Length: 265
Image 1: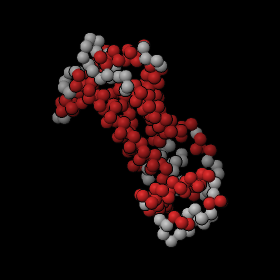
Image 2: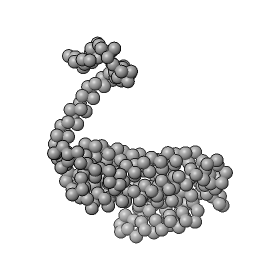
Image 3: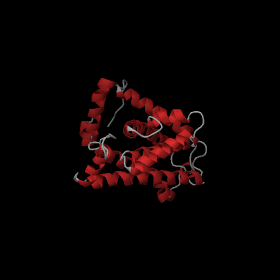
Image 4: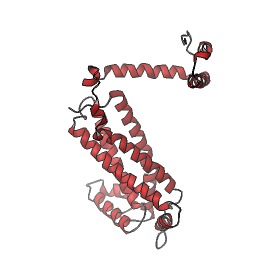
């Protein structure tokens, strides 16, 4: 099969040897031609390919990559799977949290509150609700533990050193976001544990010099817990943190893909 052509958008030569193509290859080329006619996608694919090879050639190779060794058994150490495990736990928490959002109501009115009553409904009356909330809670806790252990592994194996210091900084930001994720989610049930956890948070921020009162006012809607507090925590937990965390995870994984997995020093 020959795919040589002068014009990258001249599709006449792409499907020249159709009989030699597998069904998957035929489908791929058909979709690619359709998109290229409308979006000139080949130009961008070639640009990304050139950029990748330029960046990859500048990256220092690991010992096994430099000498083309087959002995890469350390890739499969359990501690080297903590990053992937964290991402899986994040995805499970995201999907289960999205499903819980159909039944949760972020309202602090009433005694007990509407938010608390919605949690009781999920746990006692909703089919598989107990399982769904438990799955979300345990996935979040596993994610926190996995990210923490992942950071320890990176530190003690020296994987934070040049040229991977940018990814190390991204990791610090991500673990901070994960902790904020957990804290904001802890307040959403609006029970006694949530109330006092929120009050402790207010007092902690009030102890910060100069900007403490401003931060407490911004995050909690005042110096005591109210409907504004619950509304802010809900927006942070459901809308703000997920988009930022997902974007940073994508960048983090992209850098790992370009640089390769750091070997233990």
